[in-house]
Length: 254
Image (tube, rainbow, N blue to C red; front, top):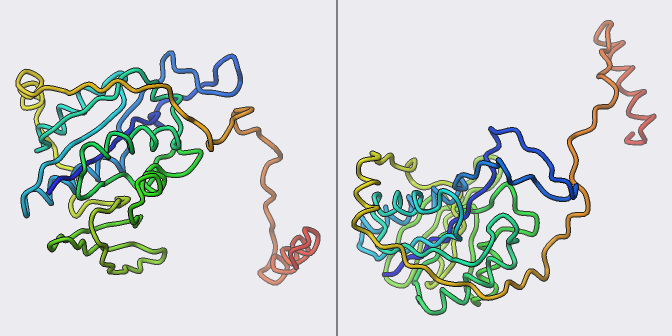
């Protein structure tokens, strides 16, 4: 079995984000990027499937600061093939463009299963997994939190709001959007990552001109603008309830 895991880098929300001079994009001068959390779970799920039944795992990422280390980390966890897409700016590549680029590469690799993170916090034009499935003509299931492979079928656990879990069967090849691996992403020592950097080769693939059509166009970005402070409603429960009803009527929701 061949499993492909496309991953992406996203801004670290722990850091303070600033807007560039255009007013329509983040300032990338000091922007710290990290692997998308859901993509990290997709790598872990791929490794678990390999350990359980045997597979060749390919991890794919666009070039950028820190990408090599993440790819070597994936190899230290158990990935077999590392692919870096060159000639593209991961900061400006939208989901439509990424899906088109990945579709061309995956048609060549011919994986039986493609695992993506179910979403990323900087997806403005939809998650890559669903778009990728459309371009490849493959079935897609998102919010997956468990996979069992049996022949050319994948039994997946899909999460719904309220803690409801659905069990579905999907015919392979397929694209699955991973919300959570069956166990937390494993830790690997830096010494092992360093060893991989000396023994494992990252395959570089040049990307032609990007087709970003279908994506969202950002005309303005801005920090949340403060408005008036919250009103504290005081009084007995009956008085508070009457006041709330009055506010709801004023707003037209009652």
